[in-house]
Image (cartoon, rainbow, N blue to C red; front, side, top):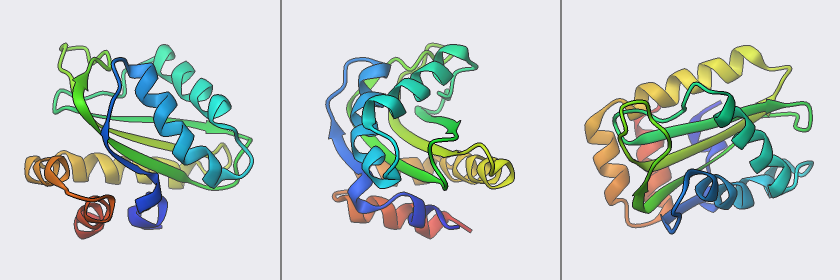
Length: 152
């Protein structure tokens, strides 16, 4: 499954106003949860925040975080992304702030697909030019197209 089949224009928030990690997670959960049909935004946010608290941090020194969790409440992979208006402390061990947040939730049954997805999105975001394009994308469609272009 391609990343642009998981993250759609309707699950991308550009210019998110969040002052803390958990606030960003809650806001992004509000756009992703309806796609799951079976999870409410509060339930999704709770699972993601618990995963963040348990560690290790999902934030990177490169300014992006991939918050994720697995649950029996969904039967597939669902995702979203946000570009924060101002960088937020996602508790990256080096103290670097986060501007791009990606959210994924998957069924506990799909371990291999889940790990492959996390690996692919990490590989895509590890490229500085891709992050720069995402940070300057003018629309959610452009944001998703950038991800699709680099999802090989």
